[in-house]
Length: 314
Image (cartoon, rainbow, N blue to C red):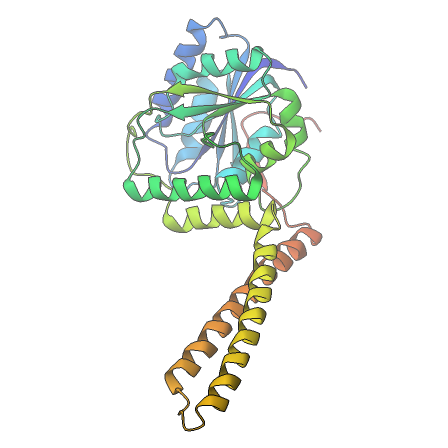
């Protein structure tokens, strides 16, 4: 497989109108940096319901640096990125979104940071152009990543980042069905730096990330790269057991001191519901881990490629 200096991997979903402008902006920046003949732009169509794949194929015909991949089913942003990483050949690999909120002008700064010796370079948004609920969700994911993954404090896990070839080769060895790119990065290296960028307004349409997808992302992070939730369930079990012993002692003392004291129906029901809820939560956590283990043992695929814009070697 031939190699190049830079690979840019972009997952695509519902972005057909944006793609021509995105490709043009990237091409202009690469020309300005003298990389016109040594970069590739890999567009991964995540089974988008619009005509994104048709647009990608047309762009590949008119731009030799464009490589298109289409997946047979929608697998989500992180798994789609993994499909692109498996085909990236660059010494440096940059990951970015398809909505032009990530300025292509920042790619050069990311590559420079990697060339200086860092394994990974994240971008730090100076003025985030996101809805309030998404900022809140990102804040929550950031705190959980610090707790569950040991993420350095102050590091924002943005989707616009760059990786050295060695890190990519480590990441693509992961074959689990539930991919979380940032978890894989933090599992491989701590040689990480950041560059500041101006976050742009979305060129067209609305974000494809919903609250449900953010929740799914958190579950991937929590149950695929950390056993902390299981330990938390264990601690909760010990805590409830200790509380139960204390309550038994209190009940016995009350009965001995005040034999006429009537038993409280409301407090009894509240206690039962509380303990039942904790037990259900703990069982659900264990089930989540077992389910993911089961799917991995049965070799559930991260992605299935439908076709590419280039001919594969037989």
